[in-house]
Image (cartoon, rainbow, N blue to C red; front, side, top):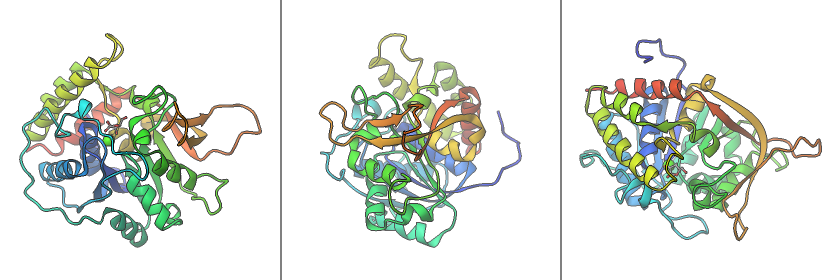
Length: 327
Ligand code: BDR
Ligand code: CA
């Protein structure tokens, strides 16, 4: 455990999420190691009213003093599609969670993103759900990506989980994802300089909630750890029931890696690649097409693709974050 280590420089983050078990952990990690200037919710794992409710619950649970705004209630073009079969009907099945005690700060999530990016320097955007809010914000303010330190997102990969080639967050709103990836593409006029970091399935599947890790979580004192252990039991149950026996040791804890990529970059290896989002393919919509060619004629990279994570260290960091909110 890393508890007791001196705090490092805390980056400033805005989280755009659809909680969701792993989004909940991303919020905890961000609150522990970064200054969270706001949480915006989006429809994704469950409909917007539930992702918003769950974000408010998480804010209470960790006593976080940051505004929560709800954003888009459906994708730009694609029909609304959710993932209750992974996260349960509530989006956070597996723990008895209290009702929120604090109200939503606004239903203007996209405007909140725009205003916050305009008024602060050095802000990181961390989307851990479909990219509808961020894509809409960029459509309205095309130079927005150039105003932020960067975007670190969970999504995509060289294989899929909602189709053979598409990961849920990108598949749920491919048009919005394409706007974000294009905004960082050097071939786009006025493209953003800051990095676009992609925590895709290649890296997040290295970070699984194994039975040992669930017990380590349960051993941390306090109601947050107890709640997360219950959430992990449920999340791992749905993952294992949907995969071939032996394919996984537990649920892939995707979303916190988008946070740790900023707060603990030493845990990762990466490759800079040109990545585009497929929006139209009959069998490939929502795919992130990662150019792995060694041909000199390939396009310049627009994306820092995370390729490896030190999973034991990363989980120790998550436990440290949880322990900081023991009460
Ligand atoms: C992503 O989809 C959601 O189910 C998770 O919260 C994560 O953001 C993984 O494909
Ligand atoms: Ca998510």
